[in-house]
Length: 145
Image: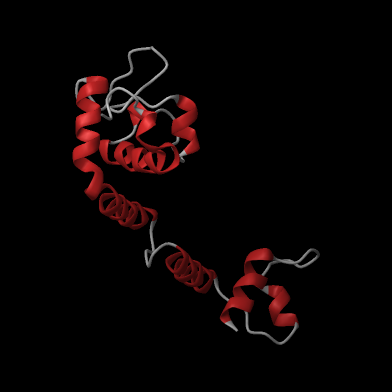
């Protein structure tokens, strides 16, 4: 019943003075703004790994990235030393950026936002794992040997 109340309160109805007035007309108790916020937070938590805030969601995401990267960390450290001298925030203007020298199209293909050199080392490694799964070690033909 709470979900119905929130839907009615959030979506609202055309012609009513307020969204809370519509449910009351149909015999449904109105949900206060505090009630709406509580339900929104609960729904957010259900869809974002148990978190109730964006900051918590980012922490959970970084922990997941670390688990995915762990088995590949040595490989990417070696590739980064070869590709960029181990400098993870490098952008030399040659069309590639970041520690493992992502092409902009490759960075976007694995879900990267902005430019690779602007992302953290962990995110670059995580996106590198995704690229490794897509293209194999051939994505870094010289440095992956």
